[in-house]
Length: 159
Image 1 (cartoon, rainbow, N blue to C red):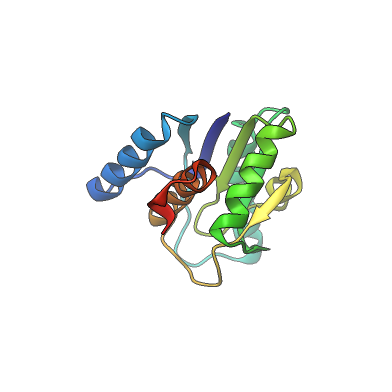
Image 2 (cartoon, rainbow, N blue to C red; image 1 turned 90 degrees about the horizontal axis):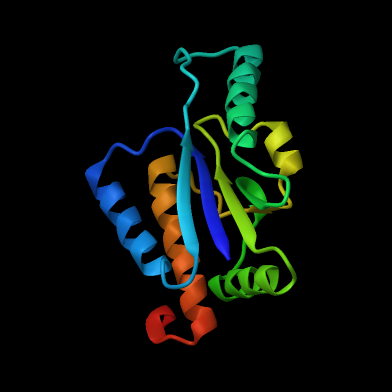
């Protein structure tokens, strides 16, 4: 199985980079894991609705440029479906079992994901109604992917 996270913006904080590196190392025994960053669109602090749409469209095009047709795409979206870790683990296992060995997670920019990215997604995942920094979301998602593999292995990590 290959797991990729496509996200908007650069990871700057050393502590987030260190956490991601740790989970990438742990995941290497289960999967080929990678994170692909696309540039965020520069925008003024206050945007009109049309400007917001343009920013999301531009970032969305960049995201879609990093996704291949064969990839199973899970978009992180507040309106997505929440799951327990055990359910998430089973879903990843089922994807691999039933022919979806290339799974891509997408984390949008500060304005969210464009409608075209959400339409391309095979599924939407929510981590709840809380707003989290996108950099932190990468760490949380990486940990949950690792947790899923540990659950599927029967490891006590999840306890």
